[in-house]
Image (cartoon, rainbow, N blue to C red):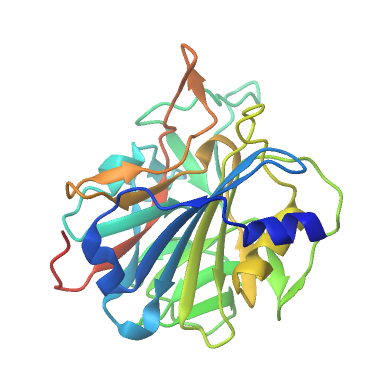
Length: 281
């Protein structure tokens, strides 16, 4: 792990062309490329919430059945992030399809497919999916402050949930074994001012292998997080950012494949970062 952590601050970093105005909004993107002990591509988005120049917003796919069991229809995440105010986005909650009469689930994932969102999820104070308590929840209040863990009586404005919290008070909370996969994580610093959105590409031999949860937790600690949560991963892991042409660009290499090429998986929801009336170029 020492070699891994030292690599996090090694010069093997690239900053692809992104919108120049992002820096003024307090947003910084960097790509870390590791080769030792294994190949990994790590996409890190650092967001300074204290500047009050951006705000987080959850965007959900259409509710296909109203009060029925389905909570969202799978939608291309680029469509979910199509608002002109969006400058970045990342995938969030785990989710699944519904079983048929024989108990089988269709996990081939297609746009319009009805799914069940796992954990707290909502926007503008209206929760599409609810849980009583969950320490893997990440929510923003009406002032834009970010909170990790949801308790009765909390009043989230924007809410999302991961699988589990992997870093608490600067210490990993997961063991060191487990398989490596593509990962998405969200973290915050001790003051609650710096938000990190992180995606690690995986399942791509010699390009990017992915991380286990302990490696992910140590990565989040190394970049400055006090708390961090493991979100949905695998083929769902995706991160987008405004490019120099003013369009949202997918920055990572999603692991799903179609005809040998990377395929973007439709999702039920995303977390977007939106500019607050400042022009971005």
